[in-house]
Image (cartoon, rainbow, N blue to C red; front, side, top):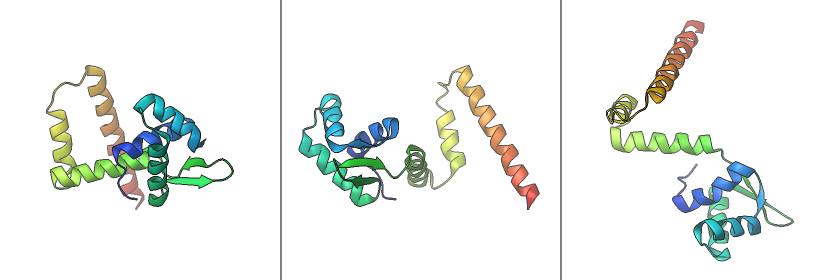
Length: 128
């Protein structure tokens, strides 16, 4: 999957949130939210189709997402960690946590996630 740029993500957002829509509907939404004209929206949709991120079907130029938000988030996160932290998830997490602006609730959620992940890794190793 190729990287999706900010303009492409603007088209993907309503598709992820609301499901398949016609290009005309997307054009109206993006005109309201971004000030885009119809041609801009259609050009970005074409790029997304070429990348394999959106499927187009007729009648009505119906657009449907072929990639999930989670897939795009995972790819973007992996790319960021590779580019800025030499692929080290530990360095990434350390830099993220060093900001110290987490709320107590967010800190507890992160602890629970890490604990859950640790149990999953231990369990999968034990199964092997």
